[in-house]
Length: 555
Image (cartoon, rainbow, N blue to C red; front, side, top):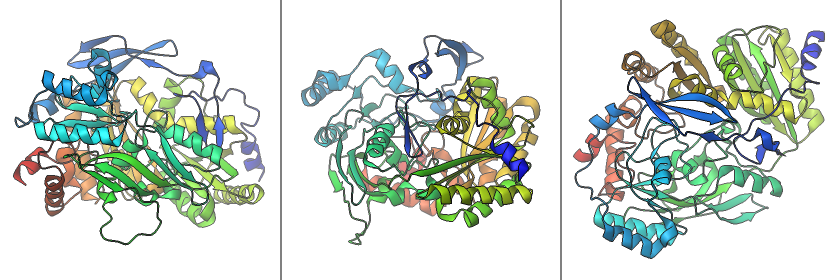
């Protein structure tokens, strides 16, 4: 008991933990945290040069410069040919779009287009000369009806925070950005059902619901930029899936516009509706390839008052698995998050992110786990969690740990976990893989990858252990074809061999469109292609993504 008490108090009086945020108000586990202005983090990429075929930007974060590796994937562009059936933009097209959207809704500014053409990872870049910004579903319908008649390819875009090249053009597709469609349409406090437009930023929805005494069932590190339409279109997962499930369960209805401009009103707010096929599920996770989501109705849980967070250490991966099993059994209904990271991930964060310290500095551990509980009775929940942690300590499942004592420590612990992608970007080139693997096999892939790559790269692993979702990242000084050849197709073959998924929550986009066979049978892929052909016969919606172009040309 004394060992746990000492650890429990380890961070109680620490004043060095702070939260470096990428946006303003930040919803944190039932509370709203407003950072000091000097903690606001801005990213600028004013200059770019090329080294060994890779693009390098010199970005500034809070006044500090660091190099960011980019690689616009020439190999992808060379194997993916522009569909010759697609038309090119003319002055008549511009005139039409200005007629329905006005001057403000038609963007041709090169600087704005450069941002819209480039994905967050700086790996994929298109060459679109036009971005449209509709404000209503009717305008989206008019745009798509016209583009379909002209065979103009389009790319739906929201916050552009995707990681697989799904939200940016491949060639010169017209960008349809729904960010101006950002109204909350209704909220029912009795049922907890929120209805809003697709361009609502996730963090704004979180703040709105916080004031109403509710929370979003979805929580992502990119919440300050991502939009709910994009979240739904990619079936985003995030930190709360172990508690609230995926968006296939939380989304009650949606409105979507098909390629020919037809508006599908499926914006139901009913918990039960067994009248025919539940077509909304076609659009959840389709990445805009079947239609553009314009409105969403989503079931939101009530905000609970008791939130606790523990940062724990385990000596081996088997202990992490045992801890998860025991947490499900002993914490049950109050368990709301179970995240893991290995020592490589922690070291990377501590090295590259300012203002963070090791929560367990007395010794180095191989694995770390964050356990969050959320309930309605503070004394009961805390007592239950402490008893579980004490038992886990006595049984040797965990070797050290600390409970967050206030919101600053809570935010610091989560900053370690959520800051890993940013730290990876600062470290140099990064190859990212988002995989679903049976939990007992998950870390075997990491170990095999380290054996394959040796000292050529730093293999970093973290993810949603409670969901069997591994984020495998290979960090290196720069992108090279030699390193990529050692990673792929091995990572996909290994995942397929163990009946996993090559995309757990990021989607397929451009990066993995031709890899879908590693996770889906040929018959399943052909059926998907048939559905695509039925709903989008001219294939104008987000072309070259999700499904291999070769399959679509045969269907």
